Length: 304
Image (cartoon, rainbow, N blue to C red; front, side):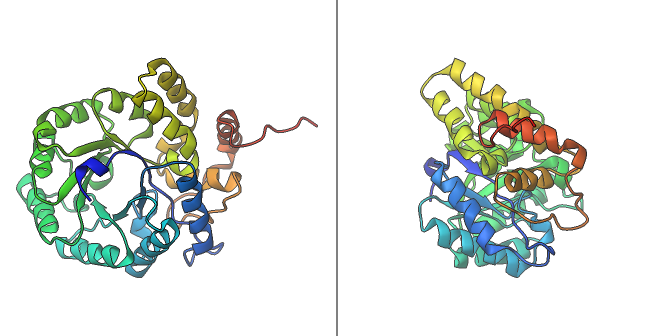
């Protein structure tokens, strides 16, 4: 696949577990895949942060991509998360993802060790040159500790076999500058932050890798379609409606448990998060339920 195909709403789906947390719940995973595909998304991202990739074994990461590929049956492209601290491991995970049926790999910079810019460039250049899958660069400085500057992003977008960017930085100005510098490459630059979606589209981003779209895909797709149709007032109204949910997906220290809690409320039980991630606070459940009700995916409670 090429950069021109990388656009629109791409949900970053959670990895559901059995009740004891020891295994991937494949039936639940298939339900989530059908939920997003049936509601018009343009791709699926597996085993990213929302998918708890750091808590999955290599075999589990491969199997998740396999199940998603089976369930989509080519309906939408699959972007398999293959982030790793070592270049060799990222390539090995890409080989697994390709064998499982993924269409592209998406990976952050290495994490834990601080890596200088020249070696970050080499990491992505080596991964891309391996030619296993098309590569999406995933800049997530808060979680990796290795930020990619707009200038470095533009250089990476010029690499053969790199097809785009997921930019998950709270500084929207960084995306503005990356879009300016990388424009000659023709690559697809997307946001990875739900609360930035409309603003990102307005400045030239081509889409979003979205946790919210794993929960309310139809509503995120509607926002995207309204923007494309030039209905700026409608897009703004939809974005503001979604913000009541978005704030839960920026929850610290993790956005995974709110996503799983929301899907479970909607009848798609995702099981627990794996430790040491915290459970969703019981004190926040009613507010999350109200946000989902306002978006029309839950029925209002009937007063006693």
